[in-house]
Length: 473
Image 1 (cartoon, rainbow, N blue to C red):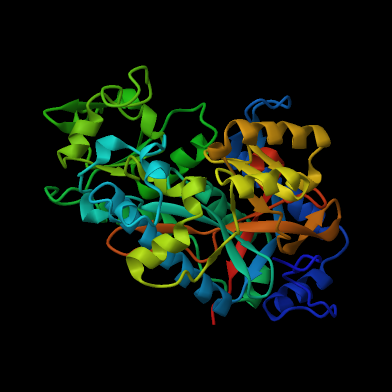
Image 2 (image 1 turned 30 degrees about the vertical axis):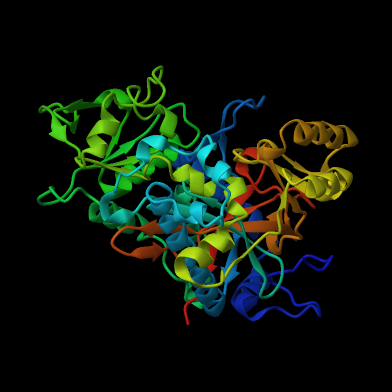
């Protein structure tokens, strides 16, 4: 997979600076002793003032934390980004074609390219979506693709996020903070802008409004409410787009249409960017005990009177067991080889693969098929013998509930750590918008593992974020 020394994105093996990082290296060399530490303090003050916090469930330190931000940007060359964005576009087109197929003729299942029971017995499969044609044929309008780098030309997709991908507000605020903190560094590099994301999000949402809408569509962001870990992002995006932020009780269905309660009377809603899981969307169709959704919403959606973004049932395409088939999915629908590689993945339902996994678990990464946020996973090399034993038992009891991958040597980037600059492992989540066209924001959210040697970058597990600079030619 990778050399034992992780790929350093800033320095060549001989110690010279890689081309994309030259302006940054010069700037770092000029900084007086405490300058980075002062920038770090200022950054934290900015984020506190803006209220950029996330909830840590089950944490002893109080529930709201400021996400750690690193003041040294991660830099991607223009030609590297071109390669990446081509691969990302190919991937999201194929995943949308796959979603259309499995909710219609299921050709890929009939052809035996994806096992039928993996889809039809999957908790993320939504039978209520069968035969439904979403606006413009798009199921997943907002996708976050998690990418890791292990060499100069070696990028792998770690996972696809098609349900309700989060983190885009951090990407936008990280850029704003860097522009305030280091304007002189921006003047030395031509950095592709990210700040038009909210405008592009609005354009995408407007483009998938029901055909009956005349004039500008009415857009609402549906949030589970203030106690959700990503509530800051829900309100931030609604505000930036000029859309209404709503909770379930703010909306109601009448005559097959969705309305929002306002001080001047009901207003029809055309597009709902929902940040609520499928199960909670509509108590009449899904979980009857849901207090977060809107009774009758799914019938209004089926009737074509409102667009739900992302469509219910898209989670089947980001299931970690389905992930292993994405290269086949790309070939089946597009007739092309995947431009971005998957991480080699072991399937525990196969007896031989399972036996090998159980024997070598100390070197492997085990992930729950429906896990997210770094929960329900084990990184073998940094786990204890007791954890290895626990996960062996879990895999033996429910082999279909886990996928297993080799431990990757994620690339490192220079990171400011208590007054010093040291390499730390990073990943990347680019954000894709799909409506009338595919729009990919240059860069995305770089997450960084702040603990030395750690490969877990999730904020819920102590990771931080960096501004990601894609250089323009």
